[in-house]
Figure 1 (tube, rainbow, N blue to C red):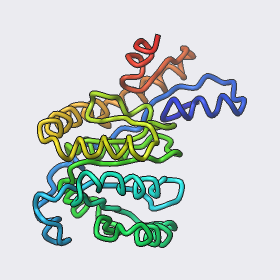
Figure 2: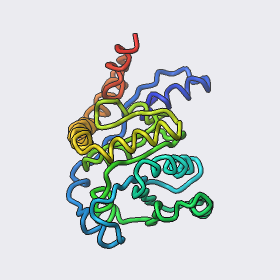
Figure 3: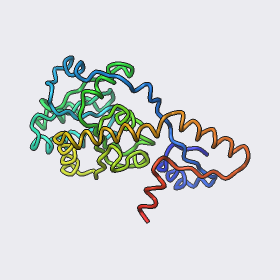
Amino acid sequence: MLVPSVAMRETLERYGVEVPIAVVPTGIRLPEFAGGDGVRFRACHGIERGRPVALFVGRVAFEKNIEFLVRMLVHARRETPQILLIICGEGPAERALARLVESLGMSGNVQFVGYLDRASELLDCYRACDVFVFASRTETQGLVLLEAMTLGVPVVSTAVMGTRDILDPGKGALVVREDEREFAAAVVKVVSDGSLRARLSQEAVDYAKTWDAPNTASRLAAFYRQVTSRTPVVSAPPGAEARRTQAR
């Protein structure tokens, strides 16, 4: 059996699946995430140059835990009053989130931009931002994190379920707990420290290259060759072995 992340393998094992399960992650098509004009995006959406911007991209659904990001922003604003959170996407939680933003007095610090075309506007949006923020509890893998990294956007995120396989401290990301103050402190640190942001940006680009689709396609082909030859399969996502070694 083939799954895209260790979290999915663990879930199936808890369900009682006993057949061998291999982990081969989904790759990302790097050429699709090139270009983009952040200055253009800011101009189109009335965002001042130099204003610190955090970004969430994804389905605007309750399970994505976007409410946490909004509440986190209340703490971040105390240190960085001009910080802006852009929420990019559509979904059933939009109205509830808009009400929450208003009730917290955060209307000037949160901007909903809806769905953006992946080949143009979305690239501009990524380029316009200083940090990508994510706190979903339900991801099978979390490829949107790699999209941000490919474009050099540093990540601040929790590491839950599938995102554990992608996120690795020191590789373009600050990994934090689901704690509003701790998360906010990490966001403020990234948007306030240009040297840190530049280092994380380069780390993110380099790390994302290891997830290029041709590399993962080769691993998938190897998996099928092993299956057809009845050879036992042992596979893990990039960085997993190093993390297991460090944990010992």
